[in-house]
Image (cartoon, rainbow over all chains, first blue to last red):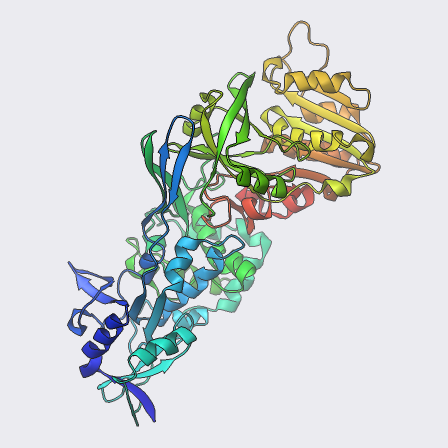
Length: 337
Length: 278
């Protein structure tokens, strides 16, 4: 016996969740762009995509976010922390790769100092994933020890039914169980068969890559210059990556009042590590590309036990010069021993 | 919350050298001061700033033995440092910290101390120097080798006089060739070569070395020639910072985050980092 949610009952399910105080976000297509946005009814959703172009990271670590409002007076400064509201949200139809990205970034945002801007949003969100039944040439979850039906970062996992009537529903966490309870009258218990998960061929040898990156003498290998020649430092890969989290802090306002903001930044930008003296430890695009790869597949692994990559393939899918992590790691896998 | 700075009042400012200022800051809020007193140890840094301009990273130049106020010394070089340099007594600025790791000065007890600094790198060294001199009996011989480009560029000039007067401190000053004035009495030459002339013994000695990368490189060579091992030489590194708490992703040298796992390192730890990322 399987718990299932029929397509025909999805609108009722959304209504039940809304009455329980949740805002529901799902993949949508607006103005040619696919991204997670608020939905009211099932027909607002674009669930047939391999992946939306934007990630759900946008809703936990926004492109720009106010941190502190300040007002400067003669002998004092008034500051007000602008923490995000504790709004209950459901992310419906998240791909397992995007869900794993949230889990991966929890380590960084909680490393000793707790970033409440991230965790306020995380603690009030429920992630409902739908396992993938199709993939494209850019998907590479299986290459980074994830899968089209991975449960990492997911609270509730939906698996498409073979007969196309809806999804099998499995609650994975306490938060997920509580959410499924609020829709229990809409779900049905009946025999059902899940469709096969998509096949995603492994694109590179992660073990080989990890060993090569861990070897100190490879840090200054000419490989980095060769592999990164096309990179124009646009930052698209960073912005569209579910796990990339680098940011800038900027004050916007005048000397009397304004807002201190946290804005997306990218290690691929020339100014990222520039000292005021003019010294720049990473003053070429190849050193910046090396930082990206080393950070994701060596430093993050060393500190938090997981690679900073969810295998979604957006970096390659969207790169304007057709680069991306996959190609670099394939080349490393193929280097002579 | 972690990105919210402490408001500080400028108590006084002092011009140390052309373009180099020291600000003495006091806390506006008692609970902020208590936090600082509980957490600050020499070697830690902070992000000093002004709302509307931004924040810059400097060491805390005052020692851990004097926590009633914070002193910072910086060169006016960009937007934030220019605004800080123009701050007057009574103005409000911000401090976020103290962040980072510390010099393990309790491990230096009973040992001889050799402080080596160049130019504007005296401030972080000076924090350690006073933390030790304020408990002078705990340490062996104290030698300070300090050099700058010219006489005018020497910072903390009045403290240099104080250290020169003390008979329990051996102060060796130098300026680069061409930087001396007609009445200059001390050495002329780059710090590494003066160090070789002074030839301090590595026997039971800890070296604390701060300076621009090129000076650190040559001074480390000189120290190694004198028989110092890289585990007994301490230094501080710096990098561009924004968050100071290990999240914005920009201050790492290889896998090491300067803001979290530094800024204090032994020379051995620095040598283990990918030098191409420094």
